[in-house]
Amino acid sequence: MTIHKQRLTKWIERNLFLMMSVYTFIFAMFMPDRSDALNGVKVILNQSGILTHDYLEIGGVSATFMNVAVHFLIAHLLYRLSGVKELKGAYVASVFFSCGHAFFGSHFLNIIPPMMGVCLYSWWARESIAQNFAFAMYANSLGPMSSVIWLMGGHSIGSLVAGVLVGVIIGMISVPLANKTAKFHGGMTLLNYGYVAGLIGIVVTAVMSQLHMEVAPVNIISTHAHAHITDYLMILSVIFILFALSQWQQVKENYPQLILSRGIAGDDFIQTYGLHTASLNMALNVLVGLSFIYAIQFPMNGTSIGAMLSLMAFGAAGAHPLNVIPTMLGVILAGWCYGVNLSSNGVVLPMLFAFGLSPLTSHYGLLGGLFAGFMHMTLLSKTLTLHLGSTLYNNGFSTGFIAIFLVPIFDAIREKRTLRQ
Image 1 (cartoon, rainbow, N blue to C red):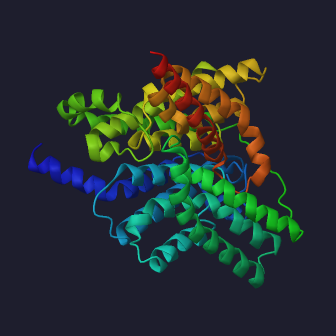
Image 2: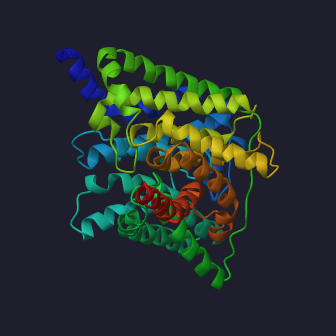
């Protein structure tokens, strides 16, 4: 790699999230409802954000993409101010994953308190913010807990203070919880923070219920933005592929190793194989997801583009087509067995988010991935009732349960087979 290309790569590593913000903002400005974008943003900022608020339906297409662009900008600012020295797969995964949820839950006001909580924990624990940067981004999932409280109080001073305080506290406690729960499943779910967020959501909603502050279920889904969503994802994929092709010789040597990797939580495709190789994998994950979407003729909405960005996110940290596809097929198989419409949100979302269980494919083979996806589809609808949508990472919550449940069983089967041989 020439010195010029090395400098360009380093610049992209430092400014990747800013570039995503600019791209998303420009895309927003090309949407047909751009003239009403600011009013749409105001509407979005007055939502609680609990599952499921599809902002494409609530605030409009342009306003929603502007909300996502601000999320990427906040991520860039925290990334630079935290003193992060080099781009890692975990950072890319956390930013793209959390920004994906800005399509259907988080907005740039309710994410601030939990992010502040992670930063305060870092100060209290004498750890650098850079060390907990990924946790600060994942904490966006807890944003609706703050906005629910201040909306219930009619935006009074007391409710605003209470909402911010709750957000800060749950952000603080999420870090030690995430560090501990990661040991339960041995990295067999890529979405460990989702499991933590679900546990926190259960506790918070239980306390709110005792205080007669009931969280009402919401299910607002858009039906009119399929073409815009597809355009956004296809353009993004092409950009990432072109970037990968700029160092094709390196990518050609490294990608066969990446796609055969274990892909457990903690694997860093950027540090191990290079940003160009990881970029190709991220783009291919998107194309795999879109292929499934078109195969079942599903109209894309805010939740599905959020899931697609999440699938893309972990193309930098554990998920690749070979370990993702079996879990997707497992979800589809479960939907078919249960008689659920395969072209419905109830199948498509767990199918796209099933990548969280992709390490089970790598470790236990095709059948392990299929069964994990089947279980994910089975369990998902029940986990939502536990936290009432107060955390945005319900799929991550489900994958945590499944990994903890299946890993000991799969290990026992493998041990018995080994002894018999």
